[in-house]
Length: 283
Image (cartoon, rainbow, N blue to C red; front, top):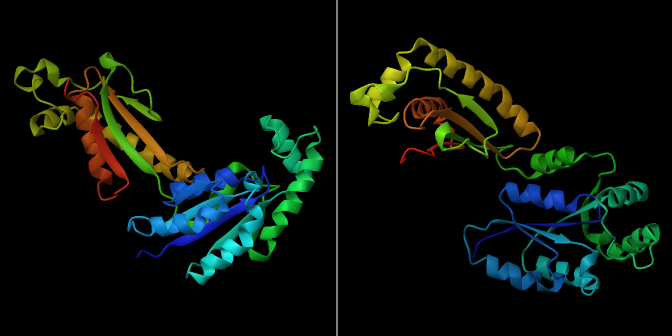
């Protein structure tokens, strides 16, 4: 059966557990939040049948009040079965937790009398059952969400902070690329559409690409796009961005945008995180 890296994310509500789980999911963990703790051994036994699942993160908090007292017994059982669960406890000062609840307008799960501070104190008492098993106690009082993501990325990423980049050609006449983060308009370049022997071809055909790049502005603009991408990608990664879409548009999405998109992709094609797509190539 498949060995599994197991991380249990617990802590106070408002301390960043959801952000932590989302970050771990982006890093390739199979994540489940608020699974009843008593179901964890059988759940892991099921996951071990799948070779693709090697990293699992489970969120544990006071929403599981009914079974939370069973946590020590379950963790001991997992250790006896050969797992090495790492327990990360996210915490923050009471004042910060109260402020975060008020900012998000969330109601504390234990607040039945309109006393948020009393609910936070009760939550602390209930979570003491986990205290003997905590390996990492992280105070997030001064953390921004970006800093919390960075912490988990630096501790649990196998290959550093990665971002998937899609280079997508499109035609403005078919509508702008709505999900693009960056858009470059290449309609100023020479248009192969008006050359009879090229109009029915696309920018993936060498004759069209040669025609587009016979315009001296094409190479100059490609270099500027590359400079922009090289400048922005590491900065987006630093901020925790995981997906970037670069749109390159021309009139119909058949010739100029396709040729530029293919040329840009060739620069980065040795990087498996880059891909190229042509939205309107079949139009």
